[in-house]
Image (tube, rainbow, N blue to C red):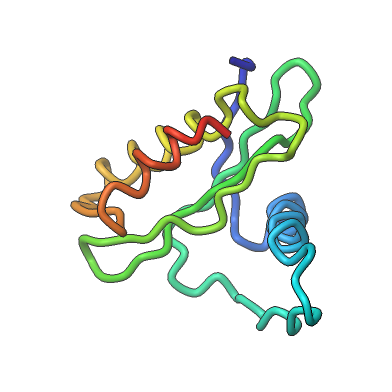
Length: 124
């Protein structure tokens, strides 16, 4: 596993925007016909967003966030790990930090059921 530093950042952070654009580009690749442009997401409802940085290089390697559904429930949003950093524990670090934040802020359920555990199991 890489040695990582996780930083909480605003939704509008330029690095966060770039990582979400990379996620969208990778998700849209190969779709036919070409996908429609994404609606502007202003981050409404995003309770927390974070970026994982590799300590050795200072480079961002992944991101993720939680979008509030109500006072005690949230959905995982925009979890992404750059291709070269996959299978190195980045997604696990992101999901652990999101789960920790959720517990500390009284979020009882991160949905759909078991979403954080499944993301961690992917070992992105």
